[in-house]
Image (tube, rainbow, N blue to C red; front, side, top):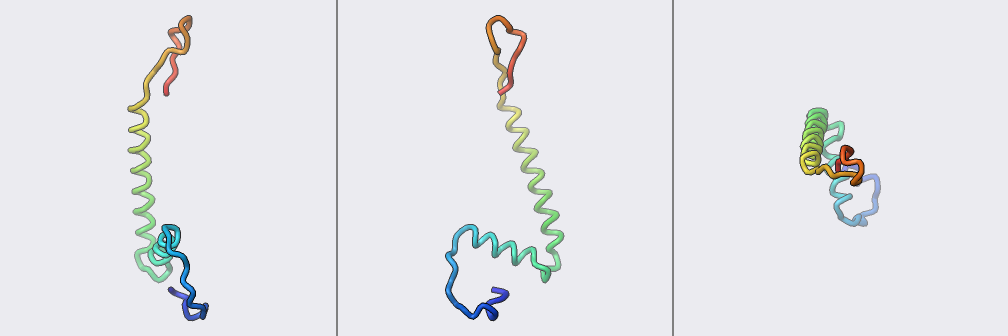
Length: 78
């Protein structure tokens, strides 16, 4: 979109999720967007929160089981 006049070829690229994401990132994180830095900072904060929630859910679902009949004091967390 930004360099369409340079390419001169009007063949359209296949539109799939990868193309859409690349275009969205180019538009949002481009140097012409005055809030690009703020968007990036918020995205990283959101990612960190989601990863913390994911690890908490993972820890809650784990169960302890005995390793062997003769060593009942040992257990493994899965």
